Length: 82
Image 1 (cartoon, rainbow, N blue to C red):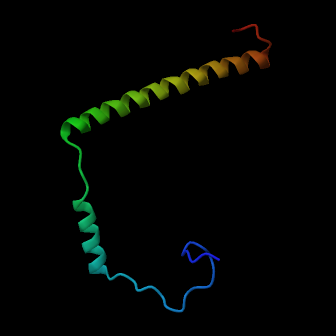
Image 2 (cartoon, rainbow, N blue to C red):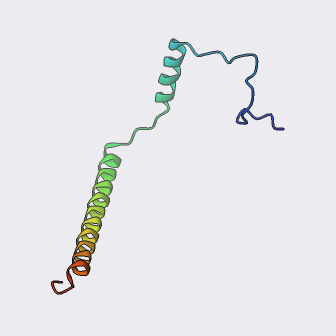
Image 3 (cartoon, rainbow, N blue to C red):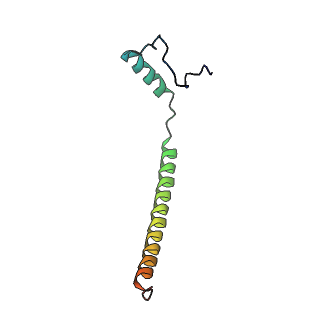
């Protein structure tokens, strides 16, 4: 049997102590100080990369929708109006 905490089973008799609100707040602030925020140049670059990707995906989905819609229409109406 494993001693891992991930393994389900009966709980230990000693309950883990909860963190107080001020301690939690201090820990959150300490973690936020570790965050590396992007520069304005990186932010603009990422913005354009995301916009190009989203526009490309919109065009791809639209083309597939149009093509498959015409195919379905052709199949169910006899195929004379492609």
